[in-house]
Length: 388
Image (cartoon, one colour):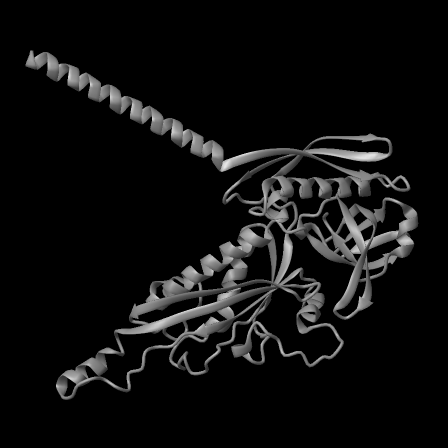
């Protein structure tokens, strides 16, 4: 009888565990399904003066806004853009209709159709003397250089190295820039124009201090040994601030501080370049390399889906020349939206003009024609061109 009871108990236990595993598998499957949600919405825009391409662009923007309203504030328009596909489109009563499918999930990557140009500036030290003359002097330019390299490797950015120049005459005040140019463009806008950049990346080394070795508790031989050991075993604080500004307006779009602490041999020998294996092998270099990776990932996640933008170089013979090329992944047949910039300095307002159709892509520029030939009279050099 005992054997039968034991057998019954064993069968019940196996059955219960099987049910629990099945339930766990179902729950896990449910979690996977809940991790991504699909939204099907429509967008509409009137067709004015026969400008169908412009109406299509406006209908797409309308659809993106509708997805954003349904999905809630947890997804930005830029993140939605990278996950949205047009599944149907038609024209009725002179109105362009689009139906789109957006599949949104946490932590998804964006496959941007165009590369955005980003200029990187040097990272000055807030407190002078924290990096000794016997240590590497490559941190100031090496940190932003390596962030730029990682962003370029992602395939979403084109980097312009200006790390020999710093934005901040007072690094302790960063990201505030002391503007002495009056009503002229800010220094950020000036640099972006010179480099043809959509974004400007800058930062400061907020902290790189080694704990003081001047005072050691105690006296005698033990105290002296402790003092000597501090040259080989110490504690060092690290804090690096990273900023990204909009090249058109000078607005601060991204600001983050990356802190850490190093214990041990905290010194980075002179001649060690940021990004090298020798640099990464040092405790301080290892922590800085981790910060560089984190900052690059944050910037890529935030700006990879941003709409591509550039400027009009000139208008000649009914053709529009823009500051974009094959390196930006621009191709013949692409269509971009043109905005007229009115005003001067930072006081600029944009007015929608129309759509430019790219006819030719050269090594340094691209050439296109307007969807409506009459719109070309409204365009001037310096006007804004965007992907949507």
